Image (cartoon, protein in one colour):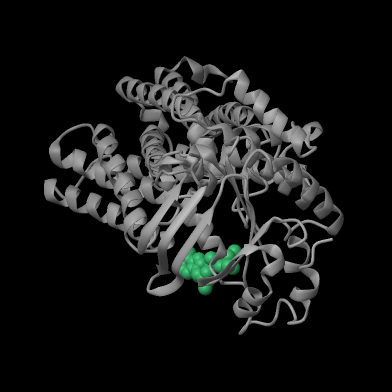
Amino acid sequence: MFEFIQYGFMQRAFIAAILVSVACGAVGTYVVIKKIVSMSGAISHAAFGGVGLGYLLGVNPVVAAIPFSIVAALSMGAVLEKVKISEDTAIGILWSVGMALGIIFVNLKSGYAPDLFSYLFGSILTVSNTDLYIMLVLDLIILMVVFLFRREFLGVSFDEEFSKVVGLPSTLINMLLLALIALSVVVLIKVVGIILLIALLAIPAAICKQYTYDIRKLMISSTIIGAILTSLGLILAFIFNLSSGATIILVLGAALFISYFIQE
Amino acid sequence: MSLNALEMKDVSFSYNHQQVLEDINFIIEEKDFVAIIGPNGGGKSTLLKIVLGLLTPDKGEVKVFGREPKKALDLVGYLPQYTHFDLDFPIDVFETVLMGRYHGMFKNYTSEDREIALQALKDVDMERYKDRQISRLSGGQIQRVLIARALAREPKLLLMDEPMASIDPEMQNSFYRLISHLKDRMALVLVSHDVGTVSMHVDKIACLNQKLYYHGPAEEAGEGLEKIYHCSLDHISHGIPHRVLRKH
Ligand SMILES: Nc1ncnc2c1ncn2[C@@H]1O[C@H](COP(=O)(O)OP(=O)(O)O)[C@@H](O)[C@H]1O
Ligand SMILES: [Mg+2]
């Protein structure tokens, strides 16, 4: 029954599952412990503007989404620093304005984009070698930044006021974290799509957080759990001929539910 | 000549046009032990945040050991009034205290940093809990860990915002014992609204309610206390300050 492993597209899909899990383990952990899940949701939806821009300019939408979502994330951070607007409001606005921009960009080009759906809901079975290289490079950047700034990310996530008091550049670090979230969003887009990806980013860390209090173990276990659950979703989607992104998300959701149950 | 730990000259501060501090002139000498007393909303926490460079005054001058507040952060330790963090956060006691040793980006914690952090935990009698996750501590134990985090900075000026609020009376005694050991190492500032006990331990009292009404020896603070509590009698009754302010 494991003959699917022979297909090239399935092999690429499994590699993609592992590559997304690295981003989920490293960045998803901060998203969960710093409680910025909805902020990350807004960044992921804003990335759709980048996808649309990619169509308009005729470049790979995933590549176009990189600078676009970083700029969106940083402007969000800057607005929250400088302007008197509640975080909640800013999140809601970024969320839909980013999506709206994407749609207008697509309109401007042709009005019809053949595989737009795959960016919205994911399609892990169509991941190309180029996609895998992009994901790998972004993963490496993410891991390097997390390693270099692990003390700072921990500090601002745990106690921002105290981190300022010991001279930690908290504004800069918050911005850097938002940029990392933007990069993770791009890593995840092809696998589960913009609309579903926040669950993939947050659920592995949310599951593992119940079982460990060590942030390193949390990152590593989230990566492993993420890879297992994403692969499981992929296999189920293949066997039952279901939409891969949605199946992966449902497997994650079920696992989270069961983990809470066990913990009780 | 040695520098004063803190000098505030004509400092005023407001949050969105609401005046909170007005023309504060305040000097804390090296190794002073000062209690800042005042009613809720009197601006005590705000004053500390100005000393820490977290807030910038509308006018006036603040010098911490002769430097701008933000340039003196390596000399100042801080115990906040409220803990802002999520108790469920994945961090243990030792890592929490180690944060007090932060020296800047790309700088690893050295073995000396680790020793100092461990010593700070010993000072507050918490070293046996060093590997424990913070959610599995009691309120009083967390307070001690946060004192250790402030001490790990090896400050020359230690600012403590209402440290008594979350600890029981027995702990308070051990807290004062700890503080009395720190007295010859650093200047201590203790925010409190419990005039009674605090005045038996500190050298000087500052009475703050938007303005600084009194700053001087604890024994003579009675009149200043009456002034700041004049329109806010919910904390102490009038007779008490005079009676409790006599040192034993
Ligand atoms: N972040 C803030 N924004 C607006 N007003 C504030 C803020 N923090 C404190 N205040 C107000 O400033 C005044 C002084 O507060 P604070 O310094 O916390 O007093 P204390 O510590 O003496 O109780 C209070 O009236 C309070 O409501
Ligand atoms: Mg206060």
